[in-house]
Length: 239
Length: 324
Ligand code: HEM
Image: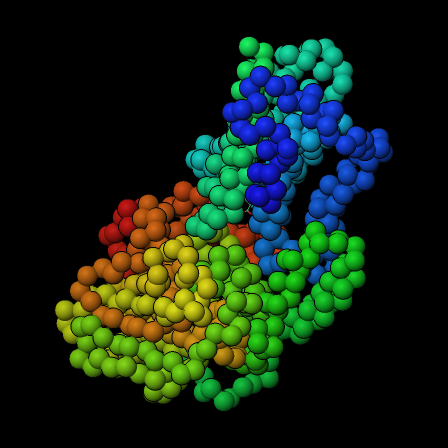
């Protein structure tokens, strides 16, 4: 997975880093890349597939509660929090991977999936928070406040979530039109601090074994780096 | 305190090992099969691992007869399947469902326990000799993990105090230290520096002498499954679960407070005493309530895990927020 992400950040056949200053990597890729265009309807199976984890979780909970199964193991509430938490991270990775991937492949049509994955990430984070509030805190507002103020990993998770709320709200076509590309892009830059908050929250939520969060941190690192590198490239282009 | 000692072989009519455990399992397997196709990988790894845990070494619960303590908790017993598949035993992996599969091949025979330090009779015991003079009894204890979940477990073991008396600590001995086996070949978790291996734990001598403190070799009327700390662990039910040392190879008497594994890893989170205390929160978990393993219900946590009337006097005059 790491290797894949890293490979995606380096345009295949493109100029080695630092050499392509004057070139216009983007258009070059577009012309040289095979013209792969995905059909419009592809997004429906992608969305359906993406909802499968949530559907499975809902089914498992229902089954455990009503049919005496143990699909969610011995501690269903924690299992749900962890399961959803991991999907939060995965969808954030997917969301942030879209732009570098377009950069690397020239497949402009992928851009549609950035918004889709972003909204799916938000959905999963919302479900994660909902499980926490309904099943873990058991709707006890005082306990929620205590957790948010006293437990830093909850504070950070909550902050990450709140940062993503305006992004989810403004993700419709209408809002993009109203705000204009520039302002919309500026607002949606908030995904980066949100991811950082989510990652620190993740790191703090695991007790001792930090290997998994480190792997994800590495993946995000590569994705951030690909973006920065690309930005620098286009600045050079403008100059 | 009165301890009712039941002869080991007098197993009465109240054979309670929950049949529902087996039924659950069969039902579970059936559904796992049904679901397999539907979820196509989404939940399968976890399912597979949970199934591994359901039958350690193909072992099932034994017959749990009369218990010497905790009869009132019998109705709340945690399922055998959960007791043996939801484990914190980092030597075999950090996920709760790691130990059951990873400990399957763990060799608990032969097993030697070293008793040393400030004692009159230091010795290396074969486990059989170690246990020989003691009569095992079944006791149902509440088990509260620092991660804010709890079980009710029917342990089989003998009072730690009996062993302590047998090996005759010197007057200078004030603490007991327990050490888990160090064997990265068999314990894959020890290949990563998650904790400062080997795992060590400790008790004040008077805590170790308390009649509730138990050396444990079995659970649910049968030998301890490997993932539960076979072949020998200890249990102090008024403390958080991590105070119980598993797969013990050494018991050392000392005059200084022993360094303990979790305390070394994060001193502000895990104290030496680690008494269950709903009034002192862990930085990450409120300790006011606990999740009851086996479902989504929770309940209020009791001071000293409900054993306050028996153990509170050990800590008279101590500030338990300071000595957490
Ligand atoms: C950017 C938003 C968030 C992300 C990316 C995120 C991600 C995660 C991840 C990856 C885990 C650990 C999963 C594992 O151990 O495998 C986790 C755990 C958890 N998260 Fe979040 N989370 C977010 C927001 C929140 C919010 C808003 C809350 C509640 C206010 C929350 C509450 C929790 C809880 C209670 C746990 C379990 C901790 C434990 O093991 O005891 N998270 N989260």
